[in-house]
Image (tube, rainbow, N blue to C red; front, side, top):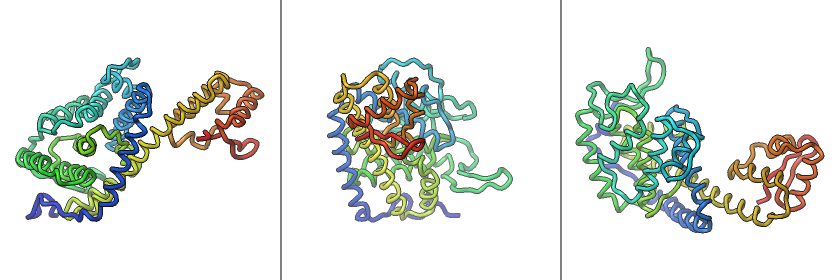
Amino acid sequence: MIWNWQQPDWPNWRFDPRELESLERDFLHGAGRFLGAWQHLSNADQDHIKIELLSDEAIKTSEIEGEYLDRSSVQSSVRRQFGLTAQVKSNPSEAGIAELMVAIFTGFNQPITHETLFAWHEMVCRAQKDIEYIGEYRKHAEAMQVVSGALYKPKVHFEAPSSDRVPAEMEQFFEWLDKSTHLLPLAKAGLAHLYFVSIHPFEDGNGRIGRAISEHCLSNALGQPSLLALARQIERDRKGYYDALESNNKTMDIGAWLLWFAQTTLDAQAYSIALVDHIIAKTRMLDRLRGQINSRQERALIRMFEAGPEGFIGGLSAKNYMTITGATTPTTTRDLNDLVAKNALFKTGERKSTRYWLNL
C-alpha cells in the first residue's frame, strides 16, 4: 500500500480551483450574511449564541471520535472561559475540549505554531491517562495506524509517517500554512485538515485538532471568528467524512475531498446563520407579545425557541405544553388557541394529532 506521504511528489497537492469557485463565493456571501445578522443581536444574545455553538462544537467534535460528554458541564466550562457565571463543575475532558473551542474563537488572528498545537493537544488529551506523550509529538517506534474491526483481523485505513519524520514534516506543514495565502478559505481549510491528519503527529487527538485547524483557517481568512457549526455537520455525516478522507489518503489529487469539505462547510455555515436568525425571531416575537400573553405561554414559547432552528421534533403537542407549564387540559386548550390567534403559533393536524409550530 502506497500512502499519500509516500508519493514521490509529496506534499505537492493537486486540485482544480475552478471546481470550488462557486462554493468559495457562497461561503464569503454567507459570512457577510452571518455578520450582518450578528450585528443585530444584543450582547446577551451574542453571548448565548457563542456558548451554544462552541459548546455544541466541543460535544460534536468529541462524538466524532466516539467520546460522549455532558452538555451542561461543557457549557459551564465555556462560560467560565468567557468570564461568565457557571453553576456546574466540569471534569478534565469537558473542560479541556471547551478550552480548545474558546482558544480557536479568541485566537483566530494568531499564527499556528508548534507551541499552539502542543497547547491544543494538552487540552484535548488532558483526561487521558493512557497516552505517553501529551503536549508533544509522538515518539513511539511502532507504526501509527488508523484501524477498525476486530483485534484479530484489523482493517488498516491509513498508516502515517514514522515518528522520527514528524518534526520535519510539521516544519514543512507550518511553512506551507504561512505561504498558502493565495488559497481561498475553503480550499486552504480543507487542505490544511487533510495535510495535518496525513502527518498524524500526535499519539491521539489528531482528528479534533485537525478540525480545529480548519476552523482557525476559516476564521483567519475572514478576519473574525466564523462560529461555524463544522463539527456538528461532520458528525451528522460521520461515515461520509471518514470515507472522503480515506478516498484521498493515497493520492495527491484531492479535488474530491475538497468538494466534500467545502459543501459540508457551507451546510455548517447555513446552520449558524439559521441559529442567529432564530434568535432574532425570538426577540422580535417576545417583544411583540409583551403584555399580551401569560407566564405559561411565554415559558412554552421560550422552550420551543430553545429547541433551535430545527424546532421540536414532531411539533409541540398539548401534552408537551402541559408538561412544560403544568397547565390543566382546559387551560392548555385556551392558551394554545390564543397563541394561534396572536400568530405566535400555527397548528397542523386534528384531535390527538394536532401539533403546534412557531410561526416564524
